[in-house]
Length: 193
Image (tube, rainbow, N blue to C red; front, side, top):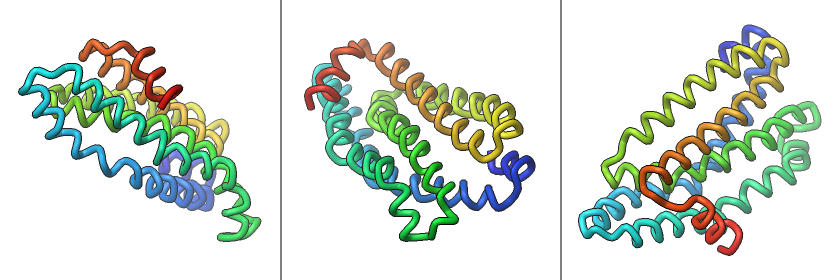
């Protein structure tokens, strides 16, 4: 998408996009770092035949995201403009706008962390492969349509839609393969953490 953005909007917009994307990626890594520990935990629980404990591990990961990750992304969405104004200056307000949209898409995408790592621990790497294929296909599709028409805003919107859609695909696939009730899990973790 950076190539298309540079081609259709100009290199200055690539710099704005890259700045916003780089910052939100670093913020995403803070709460996401813990999930690699879910791989051996899920593998051990699978070996013990404990489906209930696997579901509890998954719910614990989602609760952790709500407690540690959600406040970070809400802060970015609410305070992007004042922070960017103080940090970079008024002329970088386009970075703040991008941060708000990228934060929303990245949080939804971050929700895949527990599902993805648990699926690896359960010996289900295809979930991640399908996720990557959907992500790549949607990125190409949306970027080639939206960036030529809307430029910078098209790139930001494209990423947000792709990150959100592919996240929903991975989570749905994980729930289907592991026979977890989507509403029950998310109601117990997102509504009543």
